[in-house]
Length: 134
Image (cartoon, rainbow, N blue to C red):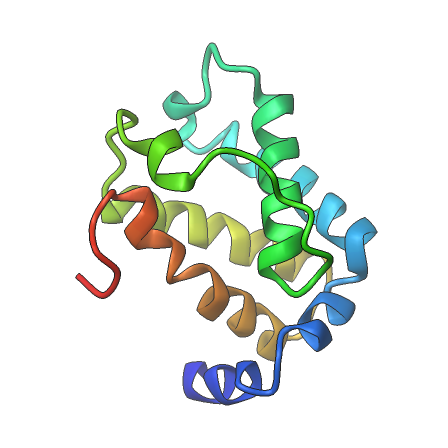
């Protein structure tokens, strides 16, 4: 499935943005994923005591652009934001798992969910503050 998703991504991300439901769909996705994160014992501690609404809004804007929407992200660099957070590959995988659950719960097709996962994967390197591909 992932190979098919990668091939579809070569055609451009604007179709993915549309299949996600545009900005409204991404906002709904962010609401769902944060509902899941707040009860996920594996990663919820990263968000406790933080302004989750502001974090969620920043991620919504960033993901809107990343998933093929308008180029509107003007926030900080991901490396700068996450350099002291202490994330691991495990934590990123937990986030991806929640993303897949949220997308599935919204009724998106497996192909679209895979394309989102393929699109999010390169972000891992920035969050771990390491060179991409390591």
